[in-house]
Length: 465
Image 1 (tube, rainbow, N blue to C red):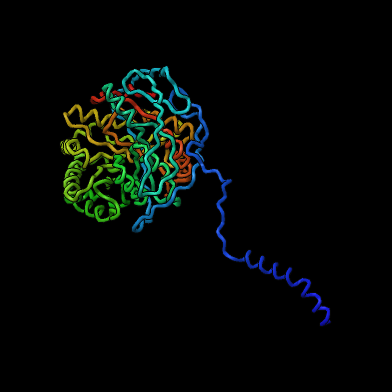
Image 2 (image 1 turned 45 degrees about the vertical axis):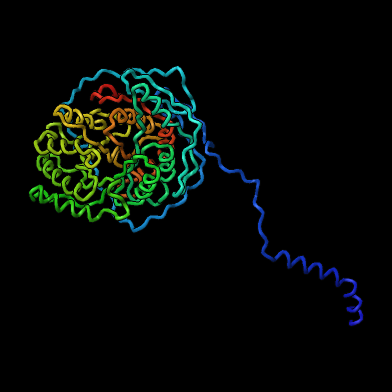
């Protein structure tokens, strides 16, 4: 046996040594060459869509975009959710005019662009303007992770052109109402792309500061005047107390619950939710005292949070209520009126228009009639029903109509679509509204409204669908 082994090693030793060296090399740490076969996702890789002459997507775009990085939020978030919502049985029609003529058929412009949604005119002639194409890319955010940019119009160039013609630029002002949501990044792409394009966004949250913090940090860098609204649940006023005393207790509670990571000079605080409209004079005095306290503490306060269909016109005209409207009109960057507007019917957003959706116009009419500067209006809840919304295409059609209506009135900063997030008895409304994020983003990035530089005359008939 020994002599055979002796003859084996001289013959095969070199070969085995070579095999051992190869195995050792395979086990060592070596740099991996990049895979050049992977194609990056382009910003324009989304489904082309046809557009009707009414400016609504006939098919919803479906962007193929990468996930958005997470921005860390300091602090913690509350676990309570917003549960208050009015039932349709509380609606009472007002004495506004009832006999309205039919709507006028819109006429497309002579230079349509089928790649993007058209733009409506608020000049009164019902002409539809197609968007101006832009070759400029949105500016990058240097400090905040951003999503892949989505093509958008050159709104700065559009504004300059409109102002040369004696007009101004109106944006799509629809946003979202957010409670606690398991997907912390769900709105990042929408927020970052609107911010990069210079389009003001509107968002209201309840007991959830994180989306507002992210939008706030974008706003600090870009300077885009986003409208951000925060409310904590609870804290119903003590109606049995004098209004001034009740206001002091109420304000202290909500001020102390305001998240420290939010900037009260940038984020509106809303403290009331669908209050008792039969106490209009009491609430006028309550609002005057709360406004004094809020401004003294450096906050921006949005009052009332009236339910859809409320209050009645005569309730706006109580002495203390008119005094508060005067104060709000004189301080449009510090005080606002919070309203809720729902149709309560999924199939008809304009049901009983303008008594529910579009009711803000009555507030503006009363302010004008009393010589009061028009106050800032925040529609902090907007939608169809408590736990249901229409199909994606029908919802976008309703949103396009409401966008044109609100664009005519610069005092209306926006509307928050109900609801993204968890809550009692919300059923699947969050999933339904979540499907609107991308189409609403694309609509806002590719739509504008030429508006008058003069104060728009309040005329509900002009926007009747």
